[in-house]
Image (cartoon, rainbow, N blue to C red; front, side, top):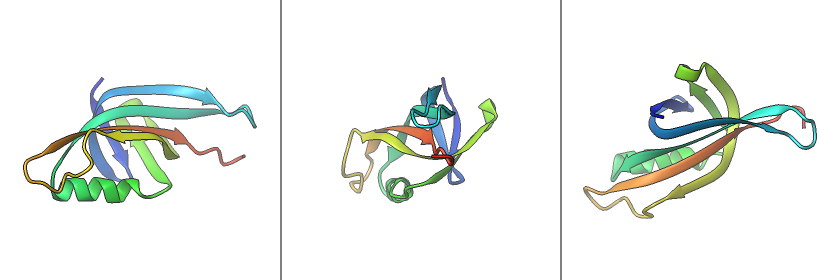
Length: 103
């Protein structure tokens, strides 16, 4: 499913969007986890996205699902490690999980 995901107010055009609820083993609280793929072009887009993903905590919003939470990365991969070369496009995959503030 394609939709817009906002990570710290940066809009990402996500493909293959999936949403699930995970039980926190310590508290039993049900937490959101989302995963999706997206394309990143070489140059400034690459630098902007990779700099964003270096942060540990994110404000995550998925307006179409009326979903909003504070989260962190649980899985991240990319098809290319150097998008500073011109006219390249990388496939990124990202999974974010809600942070349990009670744990």
